[in-house]
Image 1 (cartoon, one colour):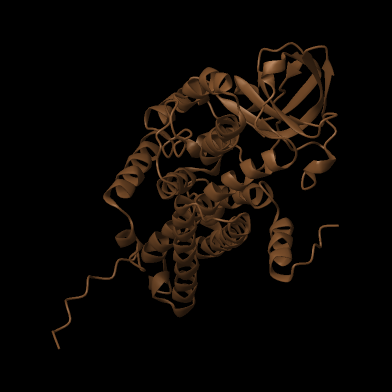
Image 2 (cartoon, rainbow, N blue to C red):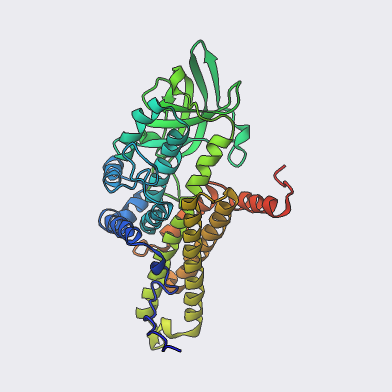
Length: 396
């Protein structure tokens, strides 16, 4: 029997050795996005959050386009054509900076661009996608309504044919990027079922008042979309899909990015708690030397790296074309829920300092309250899995 090879040292930042599963290209993408976020977001984000603004969003979008982060797993039209794992790693690094930045990228690429790429005409793809991939044009995605969130089939926004045109009326709510978007992908009821429309932002009758007074995702642009007799030509409709399949497939794609992103927020909080525990002294020694603190750190590390491993597994399945929507629900439900718990536990280690914007913990914790809700609440993902497990539909 040959002698066992020497074991690599234990790495507190990668206790399961997950980096060994990543390709050199994966690691290069992660490094590029991490460096961009460290330079352009982390020095400023606490101030943005405190003031409730995301200044220079158009410049940030162009920079994200320049590093290939917008629509990065789509093919052609200026998109990077990256793997699902690489896109996930980018989401993790962006959300480690702030959920608002990852939301900007997710809505642009996984919702607006994905809808046009998958369901749009070739003319629509050529018109919109190259500028969106470059960050020159920002997109938004109009599905949620003031009275219809988890039940999009009940939407009231309506598009009616008028000759060869469509006339669109209704309201959408909680729309990331809404007031800075150059194009809105809007889903509406029609006499033919639910249809999607690519609506230029300068179309008469379309307005996007910004939503203020948020206590979550404060470093993000969130708006309403108001449509009063918005007249659109026949070629504004996305021809490739009818019914809820269209918007729901886009949401599943976006949820996949959240599975990774939530672990970025959790990692940021865990690292803050681990560092703090090594320097904060009570009773004559660092609090990291106390059993209760070590138990918290161990539990957080277990859930954090299990979540990253789960995200990597789902990414591999997506790259292989075998990822099911129920599996995305599995990841979104677990990882966001565990990320919030990691943030809360980190806050207890930091004590009173945990509520200060000098540390990222409370900012991530409040952001994750939105992430927990959007792209499907905890309850909806539980019911998706419940139906898959039992074969019985508990939604209605």
